Image (cartoon, rainbow, N blue to C red; front, side, top):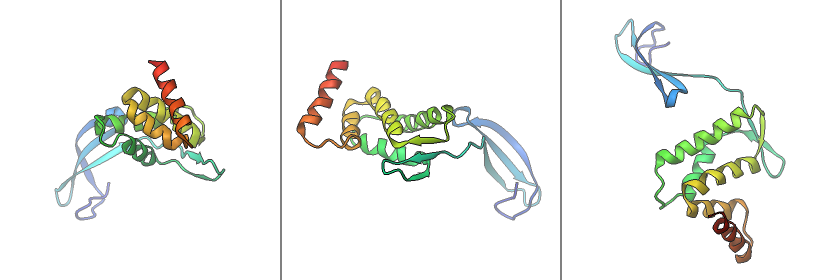
Length: 151
């Protein structure tokens, strides 16, 4: 591992421990030349996933987009940042576990709504109103009725 301070290519591992709930390993390293310490993370390289958008175009999967959508929906709601990040990580893991290299935005949106429905009903309705593109008050009320029936 190349030292970020002096560029020397040799270092020794001083400490290793699991990070990100076991999905990566955090290593403290010490440069063998300048003796400065730095941290590296080792993660499993996953296969790239492609998202198929509603218009048929394709783009690479980006977990931060899911997290941004969740954050917007949970704005001014009692949902912690850790819970939002956990939801995004769980959705990404579910998609990875499906072993499909292509996933539709519809499938991602449904997974987000499932998580938000459990976490906060107001955030769920906010997300659903944008995701399902409610055209009028009747479609909005229909979704609220479904939510009330599930209780």
